Image (cartoon, rainbow, N blue to C red; front, side):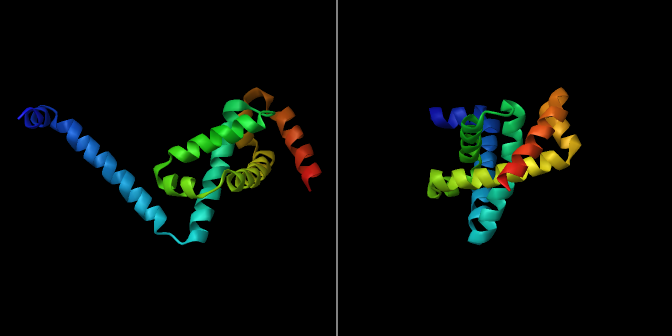
Length: 137
């Protein structure tokens, strides 16, 4: 009887929990239904965004911290939760390296994006990025 009373009094919480769980299950099912190559492509696209956000938050020179931040964020995305359990950390690190190179290219080319990430240090950071990209070639 106590459970029924609680559910009647807090019906909005029950509805919200059911809706949230439904959306999470739908996202995971939709993602897991994609072919493996499409899943990798979606993950790698997301990793570029996550690397840019980590760069914005932590700035340059914090590689391992950015890797950890991106990995933690990856594990919390409901659509990637199954993939996070299946992908080794070494594989994930390689994907992040590739995504970071792509993010650096984007930052070096797009001044507005670089301004979003670096703020008033934009021009000196763009110069550093261009030098890093030349060395990596």
